[in-house]
Image (cartoon, rainbow, N blue to C red):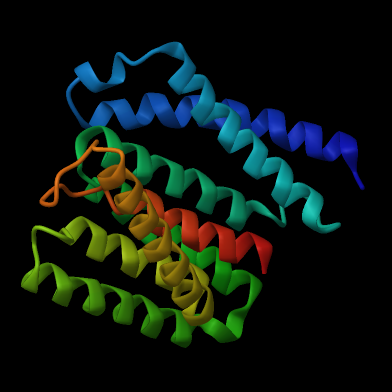
Length: 204
């Protein structure tokens, strides 16, 4: 195990997590960002841990793992904006759309068509749900699903969606049982979808 490489990746991820918090706060009012230092430190530490896990998984260089590391940064950013401001900025989605799938195509040149189809399917699926139940799923979630599906492919997205829905359901039940939310309350879905996709992508 490359312990020094994992430590370097962890430090890089911690710095990236701190930067992501600062960038997320640009997309909404300043009040939610005036949270305790512990919250920002927790986000940075989470990003660092994820970077270290990716680095320890195989013997590839950190540059070869760049697509996965950028996916972590992207997921963390959209999850933060969804939690803090209940929005997923179009600017972030548009920036990620050519980059994340493009890096995957450079590594596997034969998957571009399946990536495009997966992205279209994710967008169509969540777009339809958003049109029917806008109170449950927003168009930001639909566009996020399209980007993630194009970035990771059919199988990973389907598995990640299943895990994400299970996590969201569990969180909702726990909040109801704990009296922290009523029956009509909603949860930001981006963190759960991103967590599911990252879990399947990193561990597979």
